Length: 262
Image 1: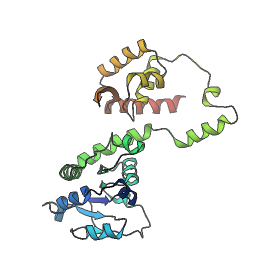
Image 2: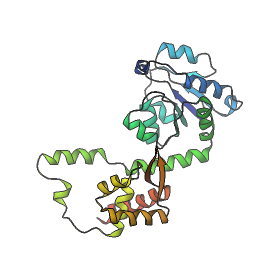
Image 3: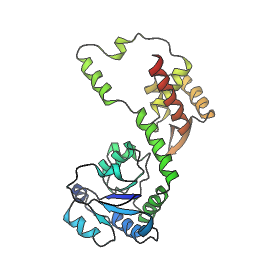
Image 4: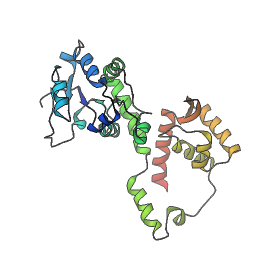
């Protein structure tokens, strides 16, 4: 389209959002604030990718560029920051390491709820506009990309997952192919960090997924917290644990060592 970066890509909500009984103008008000910002004219471009004629008419009121559906390539790849109420775009942005701000105003799906742990989510236009302006800073973009890359790299490989499911039909899984052995303490720490790499969990859930006893998990969590590899947070009245950025770096290094040696 001939626009130079940085580019803020905006994607409005899908049509099904109207079934929730209300239409909130979070995104339009955010675009209005951004387009009237003194920086907008010279320092960044706003490109809106509407879904419907109604959305096109709504955003035509602002000094922004409008795209149509006749695209040969995914526009997220060319954006510097993405903003909107489009679940797919937000997830694509995160996987590609692009800073994303969610303005979803309806009940979030489970995948989106998980994603909201890692990207800003707000229904306040002023807050959304502030987040966009923050992410226009190159340093902030770099920090987001590095964090997103580490988290995405730690996610389960879907090909491996499908292979496991297929092997079940033949009675062969990774558990049957690899002989069981007593785990080292380093392996246990890695197992705990892997469990909380992409989500925050309660102690009981960590115990189950890392296959540890109650007495063992307490000392291990205390050690990981002491080493600043894990942090404790309070969420809706529950005590949860999640890996810190340093913990993700350690886990990423451990994974690469495993791939080389085993």
